[in-house]
Length: 105
Length: 435
Image (cartoon, rainbow over all chains, first blue to last red; front, side):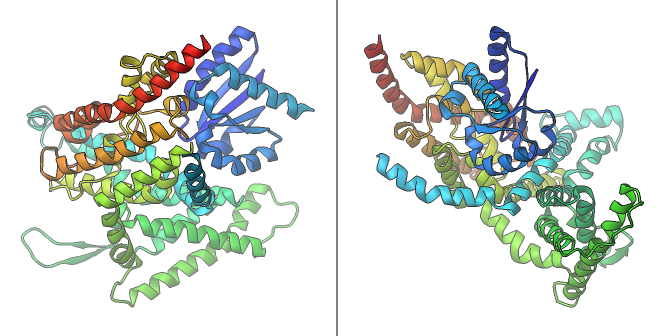
């Protein structure tokens, strides 16, 4: 089971995206656990997480995210504005899965 | 067009980065985020003691007796009215975590420091008398609420910095090997605590010999009151919205960044209106945090709800219709990342004009509607920013607040209309070429 956590300013728009990602995961028969939180709470939501994605509008949080996640060996990336705008669950899910794979190597 | 966008981006990005990375502004922002849910709840309860429907309070008195409103006032009194306590805890906790210090003990030290600065005395004037008595053995609520905000913020940051300095220098009592970790932890907080509290006590002493008597008086009169009043002016609000819009133009969360500086001011403005509302006095401010979030962010920053409606009703291209359908439901709750990134509005010069202009126009309209008295001033209740339009306005200012929002919807629709039509035309052409 892969644990993927998304962060944005209030955890609201990312929670929208998550429902689409869950649908995409079901269609591809991949087991994922998806969560969305406000970036202010990042520190307490990093346990057992395999990948962290940031909403593009908070990409300025990337340094802090890389520091916090780097300590736990969690890969971080920013979601592209286009995928985020279209709430493309499939593309963002792929992005997360690729992050996890690259990190394993 | 692209050249000037890039030049603007080059100038803005460093500022945005500086503000968003600055650890104090981050701690303030995150600290407020921790405290705000409490404040929203407390303020909401006040809605029940002051429901804007005729006959409500007479009904409640009949059913529950004279003191019925105490039940709803208590949650307000223990949250909003003493908000600085939670803000101090929140800011120092977040800053401590940033420095990898123990969050809880550092936050407690910050709270103690704040209390040290506040003499446990309050003024009391008995009924019918003109004499002011000084009552001791009380914690003055006056300085625990929004009036103490700036002192609280400064105290939280300073005390955390002092603790960090002391810990870095290694001035801690080290316990021998065999002592259990929880015991050694409580001892290691001792020296930083003693030094911090001593320093704040000295500050208090110094201020007590000045004509201001307390640092609270000094900061409030010299800094907080002028800044709050400045922040509540039409000019400041227009400037803030211009900056928010510009930042979002590059896909950066403008409200978060500008909020790092404006949130304490917007909160103080709301709190002052709320206190007056509760006391039945006239409301001092036209602009509050909710004026910004509920009247100007109709559907999200840039007031995009009307845009979503236009996308569905007026547009012919597949792309516009799709984005419209995708963004209308979140838009009702003032979440608009889908349309901002999807249309896109970000980095799209055609859409940026209405996106930045609409809140400015709505700001002027709302300000004048309130200042001439058509719409009551915002009651200061911390209506959450996700409250749908019409409902949000009602909670803030009764039926006229809702009407104002409907007027805003119509105005923003007509501002967006020509621009979204132009974008739609473009997309229709592209789709025909693809087909």
